[in-house]
Image (cartoon, rainbow, N blue to C red; front, side, top):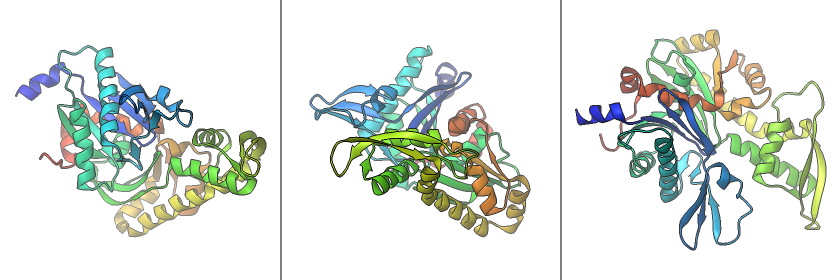
Length: 346
């Protein structure tokens, strides 16, 4: 009874705790925070200097006593204390900007499909330590499907591929549950690493993660583009140790990305092969849905459709799909009870 009363006065939150970005959904307001999952810490004083966008700008540029930490690796908490501080910062920021009588909200968090019980408990504990009153965990693939307004409760198959920063979640959903699934450590970060490795091997030039991401966004693609596109790349020549600039084109970057694109496509085929026939027929009729930042790679939907022989659709606003799904569950108690995962405290 007391918890129900508290719920009327606190701002409940949906959180997409991503490897690359953390998004926070506030009831009645939508996405209120979309910032990189990065925390800058002064190691001498253990003081947090910056969180989010400001901390990301420090990556690779800090002196010895300052460290820019990415506390999540492949969707899993690798640094509990820093994750807790980051969540506390984001929750406090929302509470300050949106007045509430009570500051301990209910929180719905999307997690990867293959998290262990220990890793799930780490997410719960971090959120509770950051100020959450009650924590609900939901699979990211399910949250993405709900955020895309797909029929997850119906007796029909919904296939969704959520390509985030650290993981790609491939899932077939029916009757409020995940029927078959695969979680890959091949996603946005691996795309960036593909580009870094390619430029190092082909040109003997070393570039950083942020530049690789910029190249991917500017000219990256999974299928040939109508016109050749080029971009200047500046890095350190590994032979001389001096700065050097070269031109790379979309064909070269596509060649770099194909290693990870092929891995994602092969696993989509594997899931289709292991899905019950009745559900496969639904998928062939309704198609596969792409969400997450990786869905924005040019032509990825075309490449998957050609290889898997099924229609592929990119959901509306794929970047915020998981966060929207967690937020929608806060206002739909019946649906939340059907799809929420058991917690360590149940």
